[in-house]
Amino acid sequence: MIPGQHVLLIAVGPVQPFIASARKIRDLWQGSLMLQEISKAVALALHTEGCEFVFPSPERLPDDLRYDSDFGMANKILAVTPPSKSPLKLAETARGAFKECLRREFDQLKSEMEESLGREGLLSCVDVERLEKQSSDYGEFYAVWEACPSNDAYASAVEEAEKRLAARKMLRAFCQPAWGQYDPTGRGVPKCSLDGARETVLTDFGVSKNSPLVKRNTIKRNEHLDALSFLKRWQGLHPNKAGTLRFNTLSDVALAPYLKGIALPGNEHLQRLLDAARAAIEALGVREDERDTLLFKSRLNVWLKEQDKAKDSGAQKAIGALNELCRETCEPPSYACILHGDGDHMGKALANLTKREHHEEFSKQLGVFASSVGETVEKNGGSLIYSGGDDMLAFLPLHSALGCAIAIRAGFVASMEEAAKKIGETDEAAENVFRTYMPSLSIGLAIVHHQDSLYGSLETARWAESVEAKEGFGRDALAIIQSIRGGGGLTVGGKWGEWIEDSANPGIGRLNGPVGQLCELVELFEREEVPGRLAYQLRAIGKTLGEDAGEFDFGRAMMTTDEEMQKRVFLRCAVAAEAGRLIGAKESKPKVKEKLMDLLKDCRDVRGFSDTLVVALQIARASRLSHGRFR
Image (spheres, rainbow, N blue to C red):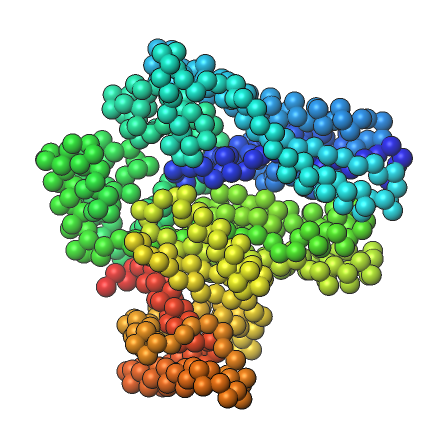
């Protein structure tokens, strides 16, 4: 370090409006891309001024920071400033790049809309004045800095900067919005349909049945959007950037194993039936990217009623084609999966690395991991929304979600091991400290119904990761929440466990512990070696006998003279004995029964085991569909 240098810490956002407020998966994806582009614009401005990055660690400067590059950028930047430049002026330059990037996005929106709809069409659908005022009021930009005159001062400077950033984010400065809450006639303006935070920028005509935006399926009838939400929707449907987003709605995610099974060689007859159903649906005037969501009979019927086409001849043809497809296959699966992951103890690990070069190596390996997440999700047939450092969100078909989560965690462990190894090459003591506070990864999987709201489904995935995996299972864990439509849900999972190699097959193995047990049960159900009704029969036993679920110390309970505690012991023993009798009575192979009994013994209670069986059965059914086994 050189006297006069500072560590500069910048955070841009907020993440919630850019990513979380959405009706379609494409809205989320586009919001994530926008936030990355804004962050890259800020980082590029700092690079131009001579700043050196600690986090992130782009390898190809300045190309990785240019607009439309493939570099995955988080919304937090840590840099070291040149000794000759004021950190205040650098922060102002970065803020200017932040505002300019947003302004450019909204200018492009108006230009594309005018080209597509004409000037009169634009003005009839959008309140341009309110859109312009809202566009200048978006975004949060925080910048803090601390003097760092020497290498020895680096760790304390970063720690102080982190404290200042946290304190600044706690401050909430409220001011009057730049746009009005009333139109020129004095009538109140509707709020955004997605989050209600800001007023709509769409006119009454813009959301009406005759609006070109409604006719083109850009928005739903009477769907009001604020400036940022409308920008994400427009860019998502008229993308300027090529992407690999596979899904538009949760229905598309749920359909993935079903469509994969139909597309297998030997199923040409089924593919022709699917093509016929798709063609009949498209003939009704449905846009191609919305077509497959209507392969669900319930969604097709609702759409026909909304469009007043239920009695049309084309509607009857579409219904007939869909019925024939379902007769030859089955009803499409109704559940999709959302993956949310986040690192554990990241701050503690960084706090115990006191040298800049160690932070840079850690950042580099974290960047390698973040880049690999996209490839892993792609291989498993999913769509990655974002992967910034240790944080990720993805939509996955149910049949591949569990395997994808395991592969992502394995990639994270490998990256942290590589970071420790690289740090140890120059500082063995630092490696030992890093291994003591080695970060881990917690992942939440939400299995949700395809007609559930996207917002609620995302909240379920976040809850699975932040509450169930981190708090309930103590971090370094996987938590799966199966959300039952119209009812409650259930949670299964636990610690990741250790990877056990198969001595007979090098390179092949499995996890031990709860996650490995879940994988084993999925395989048993997929091979149909265990009857599906077993899960529900075991659950009924616990309910009938009144088993109390949860952790229970049998050794301590057996030593107590408390009568109530002894009753609990006897009850648990009775439930376990009845569960064992039921498993023994099944027409399964002896080895399968033995395996089920071993797994039951490892589980904390029969109810927990039955919940795991229910989730494993659901995943196995999706897996069978992906292999073309429809019956």
